[in-house]
Amino acid sequence: MKNIIALLIFTLFIACKSDKKDSSTISSSAPTNEVKADTKALESGDYSSLLIDFKCDIDISELAQVLEVAETDLNLSQYPRQGKCAFNLKGFGKNTLGDDSGISWGPFPTAKAQNKKEIESYLKRKREGLKIMGMDIQLAETGDCYLAYQPAHGRLLIYNEHYDQAFLMNYGIRSANNDRTKEQHEELRLKMTDLANYLLKKHRK
Image (tube, rainbow, N blue to C red):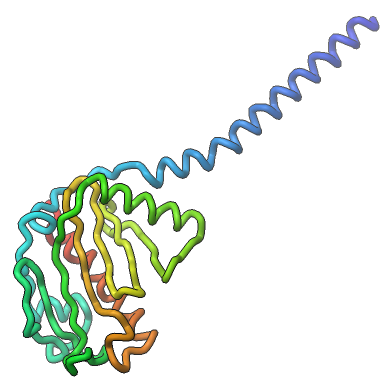
């Protein structure tokens, strides 16, 4: 009888120990899976017309609708650059030349490996809760590109690790635009986010 009781106690002890081990394994592996999900390469649409053969094919009327501003608040920049869009926008301060705030966008050469590195670096800081000078990242509405924010420099970057190009969108440093408030600077960041998502949807094939 004593042997049977001892055997039952030993069996219960082994079962409990096994349960604890399984529970510990599950809880420690969950964060690892989450990290892998964040850094996993996204399947991508075709963005050749945006990231490779970009042409500025947006006019003032279309841009005004995207930014939700009056057409009279926009005009073409006097300093256009080949392969980029450049406009002036009223209501967000004047630049050092006394003109309305300049906004511009277009692709620039990088490398797939560099884009991947930048995405992983932004995501790592986001997971750790670090916002250096307000830098942040989010998934674009298309679900296959990332929007990286650098508000201190007044710019937003579109990253896609399947291309040897990135896409830079400038809206100007706040201190270089007289009378631009913090609230206006943030509003402009959100408008450029709307524009980034619009361009991705427009060019995706």
